[in-house]
Image 1 (cartoon, rainbow, N blue to C red):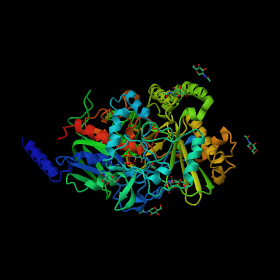
Image 2: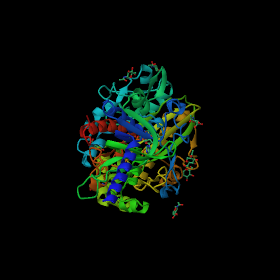
Image 3: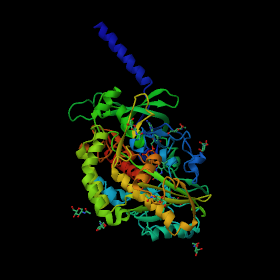
Length: 599
Ligand SMILES: Cc1cc2nc3c(=O)[nH]c(=O)nc-3n(C[C@H](O)[C@H](O)[C@H](O)COP(=O)(O)OP(=O)(O)OC[C@H]3O[C@@H](n4cnc5c(N)ncnc54)[C@H](O)[C@@H]3O)c2cc1C
Ligand SMILES: *[C@@H]1O[C@H](CO)[C@@H](O)[C@H](O)[C@H]1NC(C)=O
Ligand SMILES: *[C@@H]1O[C@H](CO)[C@@H](O)[C@H](O)[C@H]1NC(C)=O
Ligand SMILES: *[C@@H]1O[C@H](CO)[C@@H](O)[C@H](O)[C@H]1NC(C)=O
Ligand SMILES: *[C@@H]1O[C@H](CO)[C@@H](O)[C@H](O)[C@H]1NC(C)=O
Ligand SMILES: *[C@@H]1O[C@H](CO)[C@@H](O)[C@H](O)[C@H]1NC(C)=O
Ligand SMILES: *[C@@H]1O[C@H](CO)[C@@H](O)[C@H](O)[C@H]1NC(C)=O
Ligand SMILES: *[C@@H]1O[C@H](CO)[C@@H](O)[C@H](O)[C@H]1NC(C)=O
Ligand SMILES: *[C@@H]1O[C@H](CO)[C@@H](O)[C@H](O)[C@H]1NC(C)=O
């Protein structure tokens, strides 16, 4: 009796002690104040009776000229706002480890990206429904593209330089400014670049954001004017600065290690859902702290880091979690898999041309690339789908089934060969100092890789394997688009202004280079495209999906993932437009279906 009394007294003291220094709490805890995270922070805190806390390792970079400047792309690489990740050695790129830049700041990767705003082909979004996501077609997402956007109509000079748009495809009251740099000139480069593309059968696209990207156009960018100065419009500038004074919204500096579960409501019983009660994070001083969530935990740590947070919390592939010494709470082998394996390539020349100040984007279809041999490539691709699915299932060490991958690949095949969706992109600029350059890459690669936690204590060092070129389709298309680029600069109307080939050297890549020479060049020089996505894919669980169509992690009651990692398939556009739209829609879904109800 006495012992019991003492014990309850102790327990009482213990609980009193705990409640005295009870961890801080919020209705919604958002892990990562990046591109998607700040959209959610803004929309969820618009109701003053709801509290929202964002936990972000990076800081306020609004005065960092590498962020605000619209002509500073790549300056932020290797500075403290770049996570500067490295991939594992890539066997099909001469075992090189590739660098993957990602932003670490309020605004995340939107503070260091190339600012291009291109959504992609409508059809590419429509297949999301086929993967089990009812309500996620282009038609459903379109209003959210518009909701996010505040488009600035181009001036006459900008139109002369190649910008175009069509009524009905743009929003004018969103928080994300989209437009063109005032540095655009009606220069002599414009008729040359545009004319050369037209000669090659790739006409001007009336609006790159209307759901059909084929052709060329001057790329719209996420920029605008603040105090009469032209600045990058990153997620912090658009969604956070205007509302940072809200009393119900907090930004905390820290890196989340894992989600904490409620033991009572949770458990592993059949059909029971795990309930998150908060998170554990390392604060700015390196001290481990806890924070409670009374409604939901929203993981928005980006395509590289969101799967790591899930794994550290016991959600993932038991074979991987066992090795890390983590107890499996939800068996979800798709976590960290499905990472888009996209490479990027460049050709640089010297020439006598003024600076274009911005970039032309040209998208081509398989028919454009393969002409008379389209049927041959199409048949070979169809025949190879099961092989690629098996290869990629092996790469995933069985986490993804070959059958599931083949189903996805079949949808992708139909996009490319039946719906004629663009497969590759060229980004063309003339830069100051007589530098002419094209980046080029496959936008719908079949390669899929992975990203996982390598060590519970090394949360900042993800193990990234994009598995570049694990499908030979990617090599075939990259070679074909490389030849298009070469033809553009060396055989087209623009040729007389080109004075030399700088990168790669003509010795490495002559005009008559064979397929083998192209491949050797790619292996030696390719980089990973900075578009990690798919690592916590929104799709049916048996396909390797991680979140349901309401962005809720399978097996949990109140944990969502909202960022690039849920995007299930490659996009024939650039990532951020879609990340903003998914986050805008995600905010509406969370309000409608919130655990515990959104007031
Ligand atoms: C070099 C480069 C160029 C690009 N160019 C373009 C372009 O021109 N156009 C385009 O549309 N897209 C471009 N992109 C891609 C686009 O910017 C990204 O896809 C998009 O910004 C991703 O948004 P996100 O919300 O998924 O992730 P992020 O914006 O990266 O946000 C994730 C946030 O989570 C934080 N975080 C990470 N781990 C943790 C943790 N454990 N706890 C708490 N917080 C954490 C990070 O610090 C970061 O702030 C580019 C990307 C790069 C890297
Ligand atoms: C901006 O970028 C340059 C070049 O990378 C770098 O030297 C400088 O330190 C950066 N500035 C800040 C504030 O990070
Ligand atoms: C890459 O590394 C693997 C494993 O170490 C080795 O078998 C292979 O020969 C290497 N490839 C190249 C091109 O160096
Ligand atoms: C970034 O990573 C590369 C390797 O990918 C490395 O050479 C470089 O030193 C790193 N930079 C910083 C600032 O860590
Ligand atoms: C652009 O330049 C061309 C050729 O110099 C000229 O004919 C045209 O009027 C200019 N357009 C604008 C909008 O300045
Ligand atoms: C949209 O942008 C214009 C400037 O181009 C600005 O004047 C206007 O206030 C913006 N609208 C919103 C809702 O922010
Ligand atoms: C491609 O396959 C179709 C249907 O099987 C066949 O009719 C056609 O002849 C094939 N084309 C080539 C070039 O192999
Ligand atoms: C795709 O292009 C082919 C010709 O290459 C054409 O026959 C077909 O109708 C096109 N399909 C669509 C959906 O436009
Ligand atoms: C390409 O051209 C060079 C120079 O004319 C020639 O030496 C070489 O044999 C050619 N290569 C091929 C593959 O035709």
